[in-house]
Length: 233
View 1 (cartoon, rainbow, N blue to C red):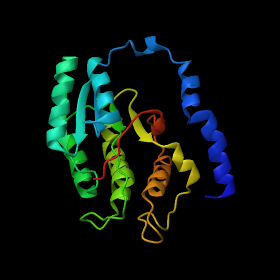
View 2: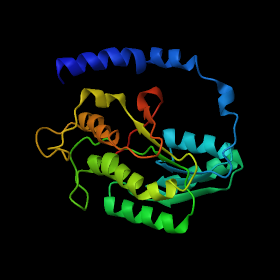
View 3: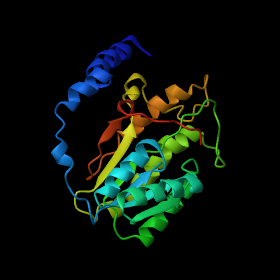
View 4: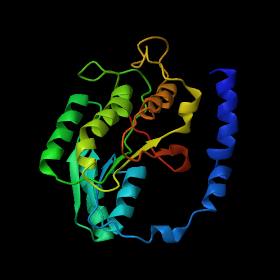
């Protein structure tokens, strides 16, 4: 990390990414803004069986939205769905089993989804993994790169035609301000050279996602403002 990046991260981090920054920003939060219905709107949430994804699914379900939970573990996904349905009273909750580290399957899922469903208003890219050592999937791709970058890109690009059919479509990505300390290493995206550092890999991959531009709103959320659990794929 260069002195410039280190300094920029420190200064920006103090004002935007710390607990104090969160508490300061929360003062402008208007709770009444949440008093709205999203009935009739469809949401796809990756990693929706736990943590941020599950909490998001629960909140949307209580507002009447239709939810597509994209999860890797079927048992955990069904358990989470049952809990969401019971607490929210909303039965429009659908489970889709998908391993985001397998990029071909991600593309096949997106294409199948477009054929089966006619509406998608919001895509929430929440799922992510942090590897402790370099591992490759069946396609020869490094798993962190495949899951945190390629899979997100494939989902977005494949589902944009469906999203664009809806009014005010959104793509929301759970990311990290940590990307400010790492430049995008285009010549080493799969971490084949040098010592593998799962934390550093996780910080620079979101940078590539910020380069996507189209006629859809693309907000990104700094993950450190919420409690979360990272699990290896």
